[in-house]
Length: 152
Image 1 (tube, rainbow, N blue to C red):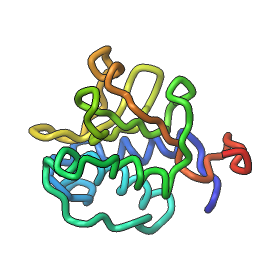
Image 2 (cartoon, rainbow, N blue to C red; image 1 turned 90 degrees about the vertical axis):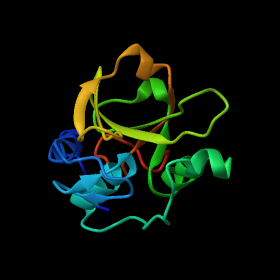
Image 3 (cartoon, one colour; image 1 turned 45 degrees about the vertical axis):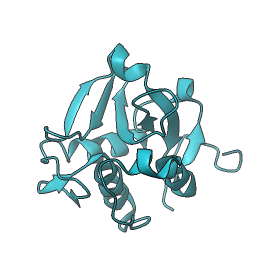
Image 4 (cartoon, one colour; image 1 turned 90 degrees about the horizontal axis):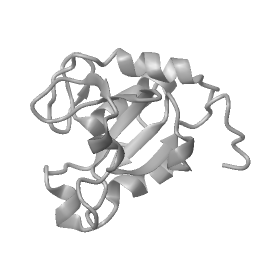
């Protein structure tokens, strides 16, 4: 994979702002859900899809009872400490303790993120306390130019 800079990741994510929310979609300007946003930014950075997810329902995480989103992230991204996450990193959220993580966003700065959620277009929003306390995992895109990939 080619090296990518944090600024490049954030710029790619900002290119999706205004894309309407569409469950399972991944088309900039047409529709995306939170996973579609991350998949789309991946495609913008690397030129192809990392993995085509199977069809999923809005309650997929609860129904499966597995960390399906985390498992997929671990196949393609580098897991990092939540406290180390910075602009360009991916955050995964769980709605309640004990439930699987099922929401994703891309950090754009210390206290802002870009995400897609039902009922709204892709937007850059404040990472307010209600969001911060739901962060369950953090990941870096592969090839990021400031990560030692041999050490993970």
